[in-house]
Length: 178
Length: 347
Image 1 (cartoon, chains in turn yellow, blue):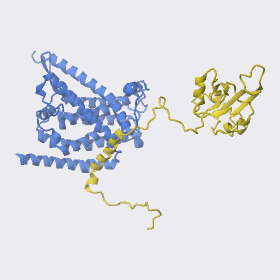
Image 2 (cartoon, chains in turn blue, purple):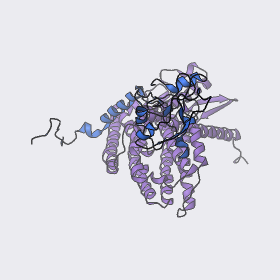
Image 3 (cartoon, rainbow over the protein chains, first blue to last red):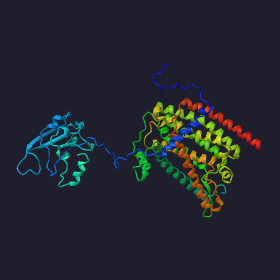
Image 4 (tube, rainbow over the protein chains, first blue to last red):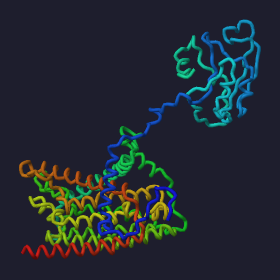
């Protein structure tokens, strides 16, 4: 018969020989295979202590960025919310008052900024849409939570630590990507 | 009354020995369950249980605690007394085997000579057979009393499997008895320890047959049809929970240890450490070395059991019966004839 590929093999229909019927030799062969696995390297990553490294293009939890002087970059323009295909972002804008120049960089800022992590698909379009480099996706993921409400992250959860007052946490949160 | 005067020291000595043997067996059993999981893990390139305590060494205690804390359920349609009797019987039968195993040479303590064997009966091997056959009652009673179709089927499987493989096992042993000329385990081990070759040299085929049958008797994996998870839903212990389930599971491991001890005693010299002259050290130390040697042999056999379990898949039921009746029994008969012929030729 014409075969479609050269990988086709004729099925062996010969009755088993005495040694094959004894099974013992093949069982010992199999046991040698399992025994050799005792000396193989285990691919296991012992999770809470060891963590797998994410790839450099991994898109994880959002971070609201600050500039070098520790001021929030976000101006609540709403482009990220418009770009978001999952409609996970909501924000409310407010005007910067006198004396708040060291907190907010522009004259308008986000008084409320929420991302629903259950809706978010981590596509990164908000990062691409942002004209002020105020939001980017970090290299961690949203941890488990007991309630749905717990997955709505507000500004406290998203804002990066202040580089002036808390440099170590800032560097940690910033990661290698930004 | 001279009839009633007996050696109370002997009774106490034997009682202490029994308690020690039972407790150590149960402790070793606990760690065998741990060893099983570790061996399985290592053979499958996994680390295995390693969270409870250093290297996971407290895992068996956690398992035991979990089993005890679980809710005890007795199904309403179950036969209550038999349901409770089943696991107890399985455990008792597997522990009773330890009575005739010689754990070492004599120990001299407090001016007495203490044999490290609970009972040196001259029909030790027959006794083992009787007790091992009783073990299947635990499974049968448990399976029947559960009033569950799967459990009943598994009990039937266990019974027919045990009967089929006991024949070949007995025939393999008859060949061994022809060479040793004694039914007492103490004599058999002492003969091997006295500088002769181990019996496995005279009876290689008999050993393989005995080993395979022992595996079948213990319901270990290539022959674990009574508890076939994917067709019988765990079989005879399906309705069991809490420590009654634990008893069944432990009984399997105790069985494994006991058959390892029997195999080590009958075919691999028991407490005999090869290439070592026991007379060069003090008798007590020699006895302790003997106990250690036997334990090491047991551990090696238990590892072999586990190694096979995690290598070979389960037999189909007709394959099991074919192997038992059409291969094992003829082979055992052939082995018997061969042994007889060789003994005759030598004479």
